[in-house]
Length: 100
Image 1 (tube, rainbow, N blue to C red):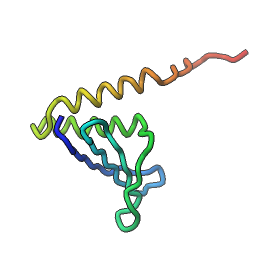
Image 2: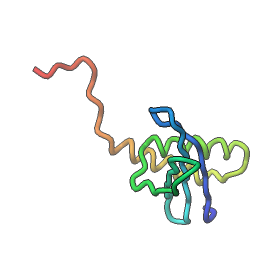
Image 3: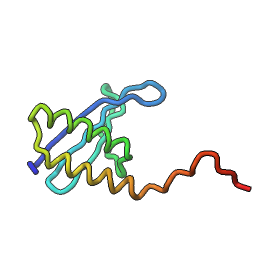
């Protein structure tokens, strides 16, 4: 993979405020940072990105790949990480179960 790839997107918090997320490939791993306000503050690292962070990155990478701006290797790498995270999640309880 190419060194020093940086990808950025905007998301909206449940309270309606916008924030920016940046993902950076440093030739070994992905690093995520967040900017809470575009007018003040610094980029803060996200120590443990959520599955939603990874899925947002994957969506962004897919769109860049379709426009031939990114090699497929990045998608494969992120897909593997997402699959590992989903495998590590505890299975959801089935609906309708009773706890008698």
